[in-house]
Amino acid sequence: MIEFRDVSYSVDGIQVLSDLTLRVAHGEILVLLGRSGSGKTTTLKLVNRLVTPTSGQVLVNGKANDQVDVIQLRRGIGYVIQEAGLFPHFTVERNIGLVPKIEGWPEERVRARVQEMLQLVGLTPDLASRYPHQLSGGQRQRVGVARALAADPAILLMDEPFGALDPLTRDELQREFLLLQQRVHKTVVFVTHDLREALRLASRISLMEAGKLVTVLTPQEFLKSSDPWASAYVHAFGDGLESAANRGTS
Amino acid sequence: MNLLRFFVQNHTQVLDLTGEHLRLVGWSTFFAMLIGIPLGILIAHRTQLGRPVLTAANIIQTIPGIALFGFLLPVPWLGESAERLAILALTLYALLPIIRNTYDGIRGVDAAVVEAGRGMGLTESQLLFQVELPLALSVIISGVRIAVVISVGLATIAAFIGAGGLGEFIFRGVAMVDNRVILAGAIPAAILALLADFGIGWIEKQLRPR
Ligand SMILES: Nc1ncnc2c1ncn2[C@@H]1O[C@H](COP(=O)(O)OP(=O)(O)OP(=O)(O)O)[C@@H](O)[C@H]1O
Ligand SMILES: [Mg+2]
Image 1 (spheres, rainbow over the protein chains, first blue to last red):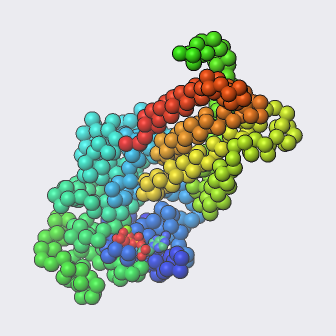
Image 2 (image 1 turned 180 degrees about the vertical axis):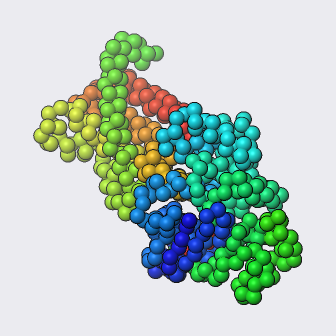
Image 3 (image 1 turned 90 degrees about the vertical axis):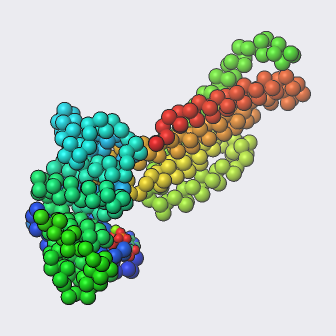
């Protein structure tokens, strides 16, 4: 589905990513876990070509992503960022319906799709006419997810989508996201620095450190791992992680 | 009440000159927007061009009004018509605030929002017309407002080269040492400036993104 082949990226003489090789399988939630500056966001942006590798290749659906039209590539990939990056001058409805609209869907179909998406992410239809600044942080984040799903992309990139939320709302959105994923089966790359979130959501966790991929493990493996970076994470987060990992898979 | 009587007696001329004045300001603002907004957009995206363009516009701004009119007088096609000349000079003066505000407005759009749009597959022109320009619009209009207010004042100098406008009264009044005549030009000019400031300011407020 997505494949990084020996990808390196440097900018202004800084080596941001080195020799990244990673495969994301169809329908899985691959979590990129790592501390600030480890290169998670850059890795994500390689997929939709907001960043182009200095060397190596990124394949999306079996094709090198620099061999396809970049606009078409991006429209086939949902993108959710922290604080949602919603267009402040568009209503919720226009935000969610934007990609379908520019893809030329008829107006009726766009409107129906927006309603469907609102329901999917647990928002009431009356929010459609509001502006982003009239929503709570949790609602904005839901709109961000709805917008990314609107054109039904097979791939979803999520960059700390729940990072700025309070613990209760975050918990709620994580739970709903897992339920949602059972219905929509997207191939998801999910960035976080929160191990608890990673254990709960991930099919596999790829741990990054200083621009390198340290290891790729399932949540269960991660907890037992003897890898120094992985166990450092487990120690830093302390007790109660088992239950986080189990909640996700159950 | 001398002044009031003067206005009543000369009201057709006051109106004519006000009309001329507005025509000078209107056309020059139009041309300055036509050049300044695209240029501002360009330098907001190609930032290495920003400094030279803004510096050039700045330098034009520092040339004294009368000198600029004087410089342009010998230019062939332009020199033939005082109005053309005045419009060109006023256009040059109006460029800086319009370029500057367009540049600032576009650069001020939240980079995360633009990147989100790009990541979703908006083309560069869709990004410009649907995201950057709408979000920068109130700042751009604010530049236009500044340009218009400056032009209303500067256009009084156009009378110096015979291009008409309310400056006619001012120059005539100075020559005649008659304050009434000076005020007959200065007061309508001040009112025009205030109206433009208020009116365009109102539009600007309506367009300000929440
Ligand atoms: N355009 C750029 N110019 C210079 N340095 C960059 C650029 N993009 C990324 N970097 C550097 O690359 C490193 C990785 O950045 P990246 O945004 O991928 O980290 P991250 O893992 O997402 O961090 P965070 O958790 O804080 O979001 C950082 O040290 C950053 O400063
Ligand atoms: Mg990041």
